[in-house]
Image (cartoon, rainbow, N blue to C red; front, side, top):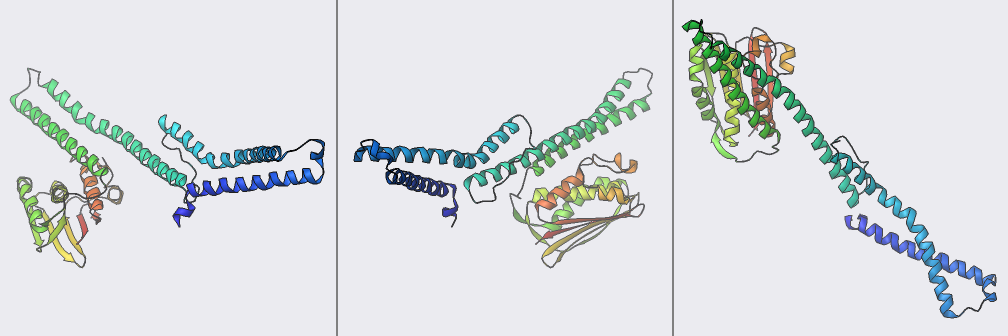
Length: 342
C-alpha cells in the first residue's frame, strides 16, 4: 500500500496525467481548427500536422507543469529555508507536515524531531552553563579566600588547621560535583540501559551500606535492614550510584543517633526498594522540586551537597523503566520508594 502512496509513484502518475491531458487538449484544439476550416488557408501535410500537434501538446504540458511543480516543491523550499535557519542557530523553527505518507513528509517529520532535540540540547546547555558556573564559583571563591588567609603570619595553628580543612572539604565538593555532572551528562544522552547482567540486588545494597560505614558510624546511626533475596537484570554500576546517593542523603540528613530503614522485596512483577530516615525531612515545595538539577532546597540542606544526586537517581530509575516516589514531613524524616520491573 505504501508503494502506491509514495512520492515517486505520485509523480509518475502526475506526469502521465499531464501527458494524456495535454495530448487530449492539443487534439481537441486541432480538431476545432480543422472543423472551423482554419487550416484550409495553409497547405498542411501530415508531417506538419503532427509537428503542430506536438508543439501544442508541449506548450500545454509545460504550462500545466509550472503550477503543479511549484505545489510539489513548496514543502521542499520550506525545508530548505528552515535548514538555513538552523544553520544560523535558530533551533525553534518548524516545518508544517503534509499529513501524507510521502517521502518528503517523512523528511519533514525527521527534520522537526531533529530541531526539537537540538532545541532541548541548547536549553540544557544554557541551563547547564548557568548552573555550572554558579555552583563551581562558590567553592572556588571559598578555596581562594581561605588560601589567601593562610598567608597571614598571625594565624594560630588551630585557625590554620581549620582553614586547611575547609579547603580540603571544598575541593572534595568540587571533585564530587565534577563526577556527578559527567555522569548526569552521560545519562541525559542515554536512552537505553546497556551492559545488563543478572546480579543480587540485596547484596549490592548491603555493600553500599558498608561503603558508607565511616559516615553512619560517625553520626552513631543505626540501620534496620529487611532485604529479601532478590536478583535483578540490569546495569549493576548504574544502580550502585542510586543506592549510594539515597543512602548518603539519608545519612547526611539524619540526626546523630538516628535510624535508617532499608527494605527490599518482590511485589508481583516489581521489585520494591524503600529507604527511610527520621531526619530533618523537607517541606512540600522542596519535595516537589527535589529531582531538579542543582536544586538544594532550604538553607538546612543546601550546605550538604550540590543538588545533582537525586537528578542522577531519577534519570537512572527512568532509564530502568521504574518509578520513584518521595514522601517527607519537615522535622519527621523522608521515605523514598523505588519500584523496578522484575
